[in-house]
Image (cartoon, rainbow, N blue to C red; front, side, top):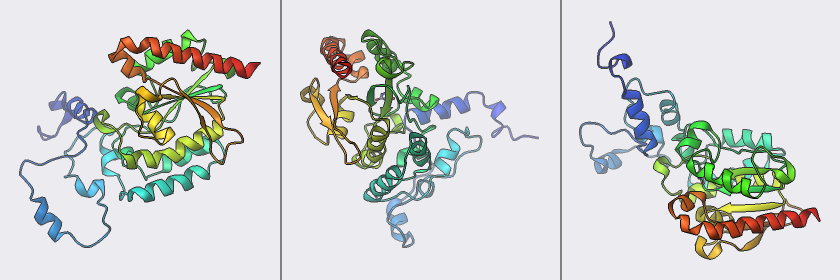
Length: 290
Ligand code: URA
């Protein structure tokens, strides 16, 4: 007979509650009794400085939903930040096609975010689109569906695209190809760390080299700062064109920074500036057809 404490049927809502906690950013289990981490550290065996997530986590309770359990339990040793970025450069640089890049990303273990995420979020739209949008990181809905910008901010983005004749279903001059600087959702939608961005950046740079859009758009401050390698905020960066160039690109790609749709949902008064930016994107795309 099933133990009434562990039988999931006898605890309706437990899985949902656990998923909710994971979605809110709870990425570590704690026990009922306190643990002295200082004495733990002193008695820890000598070894690599970086702990593993599975080392740090207390045993998982029974009946943890599969979407949470394997991600946490299967985390391998975390790499030192510089090593993560170095491995990313090698893995991304060895991809000759977008399919290969996706495979390399799926196999990559140098970014800790991967182990708390449900899905790797690679792209949406067609890679032959003339314009590529780069957001920040997947949110809860994107993590669930494995696609970028499918939540509330994605719906606003779709309306903004439609207003200048673009859509993710479109190809070439009518298409919008979409990705993010980060391919995994930061727990609780917290801001990504410098190390997490550094471990993902080679993949988005290679993504651009392989997709070869005519125009790039950085959505929001995190994306713009990471792609432009600057500390300048989005208020100063938005509306300004710059060139994205790498040794792997034959020509620089014009890139525009603009507000993130999530910011526009919170601050609708800024939609006027965004509209100016979207008209500027349209104008740039038309210049290429002349
Ligand atoms: N915000 C982003 O920056 N990217 C997404 O994919 C979703 C929300």
